[in-house]
Picture 1 (cartoon, rainbow, N blue to C red):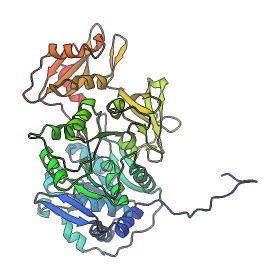
Picture 2 (spheres, one colour):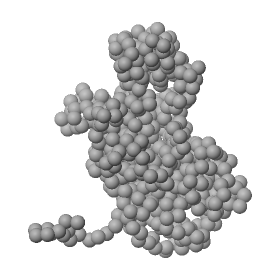
Picture 3 (cartoon, rainbow, N blue to C red):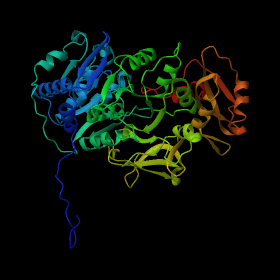
Picture 4 (tube, rainbow, N blue to C red):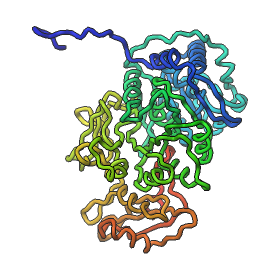
Length: 521
């Protein structure tokens, strides 16, 4: 610790950064702001005041049921108001919110619940059949629907009724665990990432900034990104902190449901993966998106063609955000800088963007240009595992597994995942860049490029292409289109026209399925 002549100690109040502070602020200042949730029966309306009172009841009921600070409380649910109540109540009482991915296999779910040591699970009745029973879980609560679908489970409303609406959220250490999410496990077992009270508050403060996600009290924001995926990109906490009206899309949101909800509820800002917005753009007749002012898009690369579609057809800008579960998750946002030319806007918005405040990024030439990151909401290790240099550097930076470059000295451009690069004749082809050129063809809806073995060149690209409805295009036509856009040796030798690109549980292209189908066959 610094000391000695001339040293002056800071004289600020030593107040911890706690999620309960965000909750209490929402209750005190924005109690009348709406929380809207679509359900199977229609639309439920409540307010931040209502939600926080129910969160206090919930925290009290959990405490009476034996949940203590540090205990893990799991959720298996849609984006709805009860899930939001758990988002507030569990970390505010000092326990750990553990969101379970509803699309994982029973084997992975059982492993994750056992590995996390979950004490309780809150689940939606409609998902009861997808969740295996796990020994060691003290009790289960069914949040929406008939609790009898889960033998021995308790009813959510009856559970809440046992709680005290005047429950006082306790003070806990700011470095205490607040929430945990597991990676999707595309390579090996899923790994647990634990967010602290402090990291979550700091992430919320920065996410709300104008040049980040830009969340304000006047907004009506709809997180389409699932609440089980990286805390819905931190939007529920940032919205509560700012008093933004929250619109939750509920169970099984289709493109038509989302478009209708955006228009009916006056949504000004929405967030979701590219496939969501591709599906909305494909609706016929074209949807009316009301007062939607901006779409935050992430989870996988956003193509220039999708950005242009929303600019030209809907007048709604898409802003790309990039991050990882290990980063809470927001790491960079692509908003063109003050000196950018209008002609460059679309190109810049298709990049992964500028690191957000407090996140540092570097590109390590020694590892082939891998992007590495550090910051106060970036993981230092996985739950239950020592830091390993396969994922963390010796000096404590997170290895993202992405090959990247800096554009104009500030914008991150992900060239590819290290595992998705194609090495042909000693030269590298970026699958992401090739995909972007392919989807620029007006007949193409989406494309995924993988490497296939080649006796002469080592690897060659194989393009798996989904066409627009009623469009016609053959392999030679696509190759001719690409001949003016990429180097000749980038043009795929093999082009497969498929009905749909397989996806992971969080909506990303599942290239391991395509490799098994085409590269390994």
